[in-house]
Length: 93
Image 1 (tube, rainbow, N blue to C red):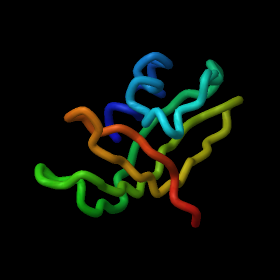
Image 2 (cartoon, one colour; image 1 turned 60 degrees about the horizontal axis):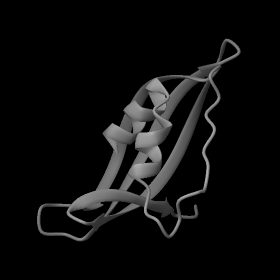
Image 3 (spheres, one colour; image 1 turned 45 degrees about the vertical axis):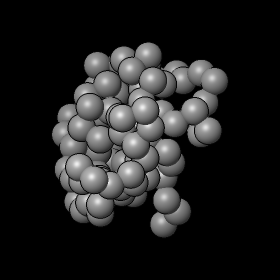
């Protein structure tokens, strides 16, 4: 999760796509260069340990855009694929 947040913060689209599960990965991804990510809070985690194949991370990502603060709150599912953790999708609220 933290590496994906960092990729959003520096605009690394290639990493974001590589770390996205192929079954849910978009064909293309465009990031807004005016959006500046400022902080990540991990709210909760479930599973995702050394011997797990799935995990869930609830987070709050803070950003600024057009001089205004904003947040993205999400509960994300991750799966282990090929020995690495990849983003699967966001759980509905």
